[in-house]
Image 1 (cartoon, rainbow, N blue to C red):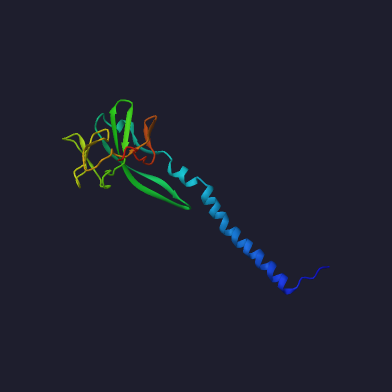
Image 2 (cartoon, rainbow, N blue to C red):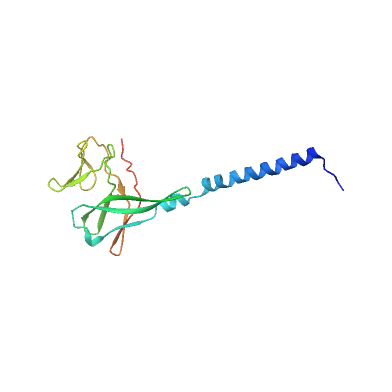
Length: 162
């Protein structure tokens, strides 16, 4: 029978405890690095409107709530989108912030364009810039129609930025 001395016992105990602490720290870190749960959850389609509520060439602002997952924190975010039906069978959805400085913009029914009252940017019904200082089109939500419901996903930033 092998008898272990005090120094050997303490050395092995410290090694075992150190290994346990290292494992406890490494597992959540590895899960975070290699898990795609947050991304997949944040990119879910969200139902925002009924297609019958959107008139041809008449943008409508819709409000909706989407579930957000950031690491281990689940939250709900209330936001909005501008939905446009430029022609039958086509749906566009725009993020509600101006691409200049992120101000909210409005639809100007008289001039038939989106107007940012803060800095004077104007955007066409298709989201393209009509008047600066904004230099890129409105950010668009990917859209799909399933039956009578319109679904969108989080914003995809335009790639035509200068």
